[in-house]
Every structure is written in structure tokens, then in C-alpha cells.
Amino acid sequence: MPDILEDAGNMFSALFRELLNEMYDELVYLDKRIHSLEQKLVTLSAGHENCQRLLKIHGVGLLTATALIAAIGDVSVFKNGRELAAWLGLVPKQCSTGGKQTLLGISKRGDPYLRTLLIHGGRSVVRLAHKHQDKRSRWIGGIKQRRGENISNVAVANKNARIVWALLTQKKNYQTMQA
Image (tube, rainbow, N blue to C red; front, top):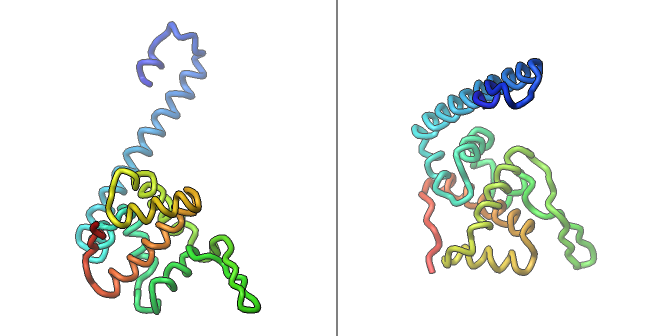
């Protein structure tokens, strides 16, 4: 960008060059700020045992792990993993009557930021699932084939929320499903 701004032969007006330069300086500042905040999160998560547990789950990154730890607090308030997933808005709405159960789209109750982070993490796992042959990847491939990509993204996010609950309540490390 600085080379483009300094090139007098590109027919940009002086005002436009000045505006571009200001926007470039702002972009550089924001990039440094993001890097600084990310380093603080890395330092914070390195000293937190539960955060390190969550970082081992496929589809849970630094932002998701730290946000979940901060938002959940005491995981014992949730009876099971489904309650945590429901609190995040990752379970289907139910419209049941007369013994017939109808499942609708996800409830979208709870924290939209956490739900978005988990769904984006699920999206990255689904996108790469075809490269692996472990049990979880085959499960993801089956859901994707039957129900489509978006539903499989939410299904992985839901499963990750349940795994988060299990890891935090049992104080165990995540182990991938083999074969």
C-alpha cells in the first residue's frame, strides 16, 4: 500500500491518497491491537488448565475456549451436556403433541457470540472431515450426506458443546475417537 500511495503515476488525487494513507494507518494500528490482544489470550489460556483441555477439541480455538470458560463459570450448574448445548442455543426446538415429536431448527436461545464461535469451529471441522477416516469424521460425513452442510456444522457445534461439558465436569483431557 505505501508503494501505491507514493507512485505519482497512478493518477490518484492528493485527497484520495491522503484518505487511503489514513485508512492504511488505521488498518496497521488495528492489526497491531489484534495481535496484542491475541498474545494476552495466549498467555491467559496457557495458565488455565480447563482452557488447555478445551483447546484439544477439533473446532475449538483460542477465542472459543477462553470465551466458553469465561461465560460458563461453574459447569456444575448444567445437569448434562444437552443442557449446556441448550443454554447455548444449539439444540432443535421441539413441537410435540399426541406422541408425535417434531424437531424444528435450532432454538437460538443463549449467547449468540458463543453459538457463532462454536458453529464456525464446526464449519472448519466439517470442511476437513473428508480428509480423515476416524469415527468422528465418518459420523460427520454421514450427517453431511444425509442432511446437508449447514445442519452438519450445527451438529458438530452441538457435539463440541457436549464434549466441553464432559471435559469440564470430569476434569479429563480430550481423546479423539479412533477407527
